[in-house]
Image (cartoon, rainbow, N blue to C red; front, side):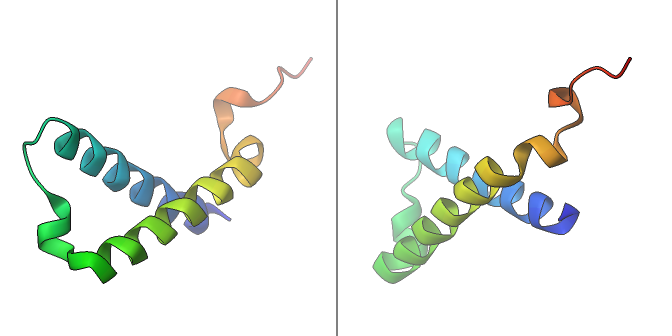
Length: 68
């Protein structure tokens, strides 16, 4: 599960940076990846989001309930 968390976190970082750069017209990632590449990247980002939502409480040490 740790590997899945790491991979999905990296994909989410790349997706976030891609959206940030394209929203300010600083860089168009679709020109680098092409249409098919952007579709694949979008699907991977969507899967990464779902994986993080499902596994977040198991992986995140900050979200654990305090133990008494």
